[in-house]
Length: 235
Ligand SMILES: [Mg+2]
Image 1 (cartoon, protein in one colour):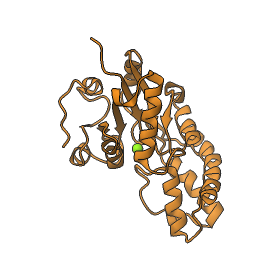
Image 2: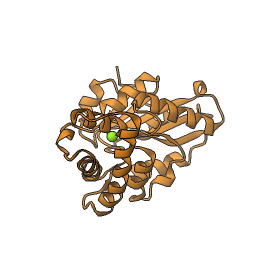
Image 3: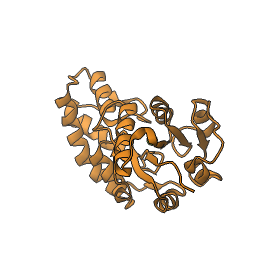
């Protein structure tokens, strides 16, 4: 049976791994360095892109938010992130992540990439701790766009290019843990497999229109969902 070419775009935080707060600590350190305070970051980062987090923090601090200002904070963030990720005691790889990637890697006509709000070098730091970064050959990142739907679209285009087909010929499946992942998938006409390994329940994620919402990648039916052979449950 030949399957439709498929592009998989995996979110990182709350989906593949959780860094035990290392990402937040690193952004807080960058803000202390650049604005003197991290109190301006009193909002949830879930599903936000790195540049959007920095922009909102700088806005709260009543500081300039031009591209260069955001880039400077992100440069400090990356230096802090390497230290925080190396020393965090509670880094986890979520259930069945490795097994799922191993399984996808055996399928023909599929491209396994990232769809993440992390800037690419931050994604590398987080996933390298789990020896996972090299498993993903392309992606859409927070450095491609501050807007999640746009970076997901970029990742989908890169995946189609790897498969040597046009994007309209592909299924695209976004795997993520927040309503923002689901919304970005919907914005580009992609399917979404939402996992409750981040801050949201599977009921929350189903309610915002995920194609499928499960407790984790270890749930029954996940392989069939990724194959597109499981009934769609989203609205
Ligand atoms: Mg996430």
